[in-house]
Image (cartoon, rainbow, N blue to C red; front, side):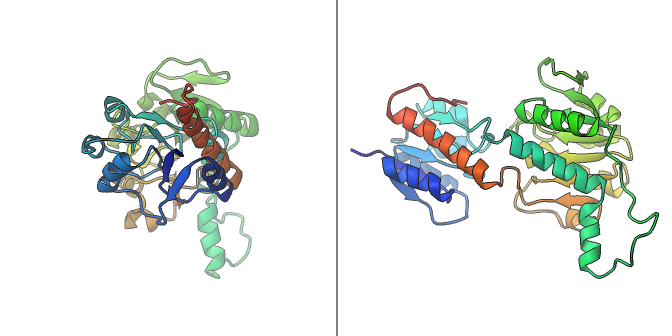
Length: 317
């Protein structure tokens, strides 16, 4: 009998075709994330589930499944803080993700946010579109020159290292970083704590995984430690930053700007951030390139196929 697979959101067509060739696929025809009640029902109804960011695979939703049929949650994405992996394991459900496929694309978005925020590109775009630009002026919209600056990276995993390489090789930046464990990275210096990175850096990039351990890691004390000319970039998860503390730091001039691709209550973006000209706001574009999303989908499917064939999972979490 063909195994059943639930895909929670529309994926690139080539991925859907590959899935349909091998499995009995159900695709949710909505952009809304799965609620806890949907998760519980899906765990009882399908052999495998391919979810993505926002789907509520909480411990409560998983525990509520009386007779789970699902044996694999193959997450579409590297971050899986929306999935209680421990609760899944306790019910005999494996969890996988898609590391590697997202690294370069996410690092590219970090550089996009650095450049846009430091060079005031979003503000300039809005000025031109509003018909307010009167021509080149020697002191108009002066921003931060990136070359040679100190970039501090919070979380030196695959993505953090890719960001470091781009900043060092492309702009001659000095790299400092904080990481949960000791790590040797060529051309970069590990500091004792995130606060030490905040004190040293002209640009801080948050690239740590999400989850309970890192929630509000970037908080009021962190912003107090940052230099007043420095900018903060976040491409990790929204709740790694205490958004209220960040807004206060921006309003009080404790930091010069921020570039954000993720938000604490995503997709809700506080009005205070929207109103700030020194903040760059992107709609979670980290992996938004067709070939990257195809690679992610194919990696998720590789885990599903391995599961159905009884082989070791390529990417267990």
